[in-house]
Every structure is written in C-alpha cells, then in structure tokens.
View 1 (cartoon, helix red, strand yellow):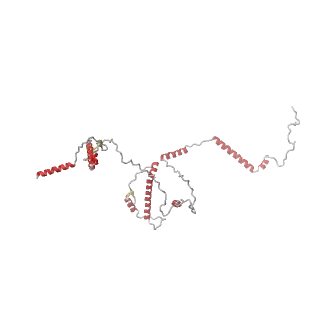
View 2 (cartoon, helix red, strand yellow):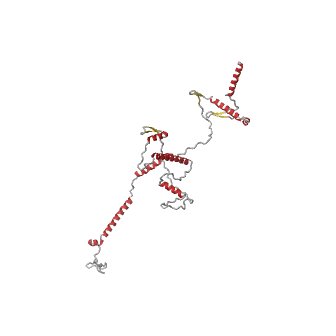
View 3 (cartoon, helix red, strand yellow):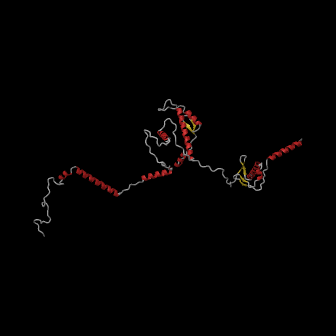
Length: 348
C-alpha cells in the first residue's frame, strides 16, 4: 500500500515536470540579438516538412517558445537591480531600426482662428477651471453639468425686457439662444474639418428664423432666381429690384493676404518716421516765379479798376489825353521842316 502511494507521487511529479520545458535550448546557429528593442533574429533553417504537416501550429508555437527563452536568457546576463521587490534590468542602446506598420501621422490642420493667432503672434492663455460667483457665494466650474446647475440656480428669475412681449417665455427664449450658439459652434467645427481635407462647403440655403435680415432675403431671392430651368437667364425682374452688376466668369475678388504682426509694426513705424522727419524743400525759382505772377496779376487788377472808373474824364483833369474841341493842325503849320533854315541863325 505504501509502495503504491510513493509510485503515484513520483508519477505526479513527473507529469508536472513534463509541463514545463527546460531553460536550456540548443540551436545550430546562434541567434542575432538587439536587446535595446527586445529583438531576436533566428537564421536557422525552417523544417518545411513539419510546417506543411497537420502539426504546423504546434511546430510554430514550440519554435517561438524556444527563441523567446533564448532572448530571456540573454536578458538575465545583463546587470540588474531590485526596486521595491521587483527586478529591473537596464537595456542597452538599440542598434536595429524596426520598420513601421503604418506611415507617420500627418500634422493636424490648423483652424482659421489658430492660423490668425499664429500670424498675429497671439498666445492662448490657460484659463482657470473654476470661477467665483458673487451671487451664489461659491466656486463654480467653468464647464460641465455643475455649471449648468449653478446657472439654473442663479437665474431662477429672469427680467422681461421693455420691448419684449410680456407673455413670452424668457426661459424658452434663453434655451433657444443657447441651442443656436451650440449649433453655430458645431457648424464652425465641421467647416474647419472640411477645410482641413480640402472639401468645398456649399454656401446655399437660409437658416430657419422668424425674421429674416436683408442679407438673408437677398440670398433667398438669388437662390430662387437661379432655381429655374434657364438658371435665372429669362427670369423677369421684380418691381423694385435694383439692377446688379454682372461679374465676368473667372474673376474673383482679390483678398488681401494677412500681414504678420512684426511686418505690420515695422511698416507703421516707417510711415510715422517719414512724416515726422520730413523737411520742407525750398525751390527758389518756383518762389520767384510765384512772386512775379502775383505782382503781374495785382497790376492787371489795378488797370481794370482804373479803366472802370472813367479813364477819359480823369485824363482831362490830369492833362492826359486830347481836348474834345482840338483840331488837327493844317499841313505845313505847326510842323517844323528840318531842311528850312531858321531865321536869325547863320550857318557856320
């Protein structure tokens, strides 16, 4: 009876030992190791007969187990230390570059605001997660369901504006306004995604609102006009519709590129310096000609004034001009003949 118990115990130990293979593995060719990346390369020949048989999975499993055991044996050869009851091994520098399964991810496309902030040199400041509410006298989170609960607790009573309908529910109006803001933010987010993937967003349709603005009415009128079979070519004009300028196809409005903050500052300083440091230039010839022109124009005005006051009468008074009753001298009278000798004079 005792012999049977001992035999059974030995058989049980043999079975348990059979479950675990030895840590000593023999290979015809040694493996190539890169312990920095925990890589082991087996260059031994594969047994094609075992690989093509029905026990293919078992053969590959044993092969992977043996190679892993060899890699772990090499790791135990490295210097190790114990940190908080754990054995830690410092791996050496890697020497083999492992290829990637997928290409490197592309950088995320910046939104319109991020592009504008980068060009203008604006930096995003980190905001606090909670703020102090003077009405509730406690700290309220900026975002989340607790923020909504605090707003509901604070705004339990809303004031009706003077021009609003007294029977209108201000709470529903506030909720509708908040929903519109959320929808606008979501629309802007989708537009940023479309811009990042170079997808053109169609600018068509009018948002559903109770009162349309002039711009929205103009958009609706334009969409209704081009919705005909002729794309609005033979559509008659409305009674009070103004004629619009037709743009040539292919022409686009020129957009001014945004200028970086440093260049804008430098150009503005250049303009200010050019204005402040500007010195007047004296052109002597131009100044002399201007003075001469002024004097001539002044004399001309004086002559016009003199003639306008009656120049003939003033001429008589001052001995200027001919008397009204004077006659022309007769021929030979009043004129001196230069060839006739003067009386009482002798010629020398």
